[in-house]
Image (tube, rainbow, N blue to C red):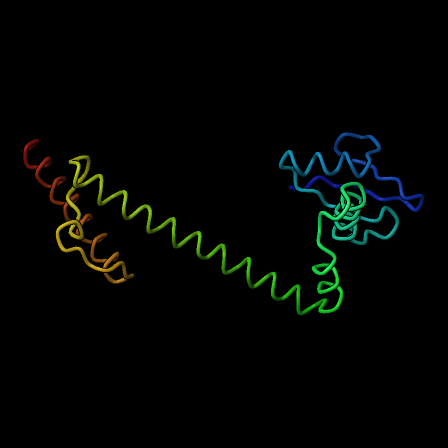
Length: 159
């Protein structure tokens, strides 16, 4: 649940969870500490989060002198919504790439562990097939069959 910061008409920012007034620097520190912030207009309830975050970035820009290249800022203003769409698509694509890489890393680790004798043998370790959803599914089914077989053997021993 995001921290709710109310912005009053006199531009003061009030942290409702801590019951205290805060500055843009305080909000920046909260975000760096991992807190999700939501800024709303105290009178209307309008969401001012994006505006406030942009203000923090601009204050940092002013203090650090040219942290963001002027050419980048020109393009951002010039292309507005198209730039936002591009950024959203790029981030989505990057996150999907991370998920795919994570799955591939997990598969490689399972194969490595099975070859090291730390887990059930992986069918792919012997076949060296391409990573495809079908092959991953086959591997998972083979592993499940192996587990069922081991459970059946344990049950038989108990009886």
